[in-house]
Image (spheres, rainbow, N blue to C red):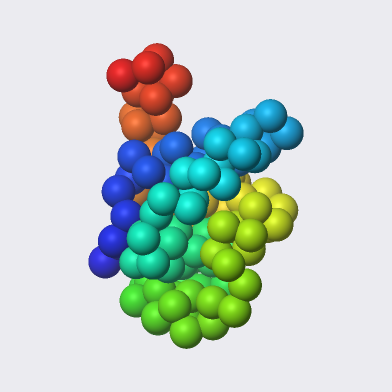
Length: 108
């Protein structure tokens, strides 16, 4: 079970798409997430890049907690195609950030 809201994942996706101009904003956003939220975010990204299957989400979260040797914001910011992996991970889990992304873009 994810310990981060779809809206927060949608925020990360949108900022990661604009990393050239939004890296500072994304880093600040990630710095404000708690350890459970960060572990869930990493797990969704791993599912999205096929490191874990959707049915292995709990294992992915546990692995993210256990193997966090680099600060998680640094790890995520250094991950190529972060937004794509997060979107793919949500899709694999039967979730979507599309509505939340639309609301965020509209300022809702």
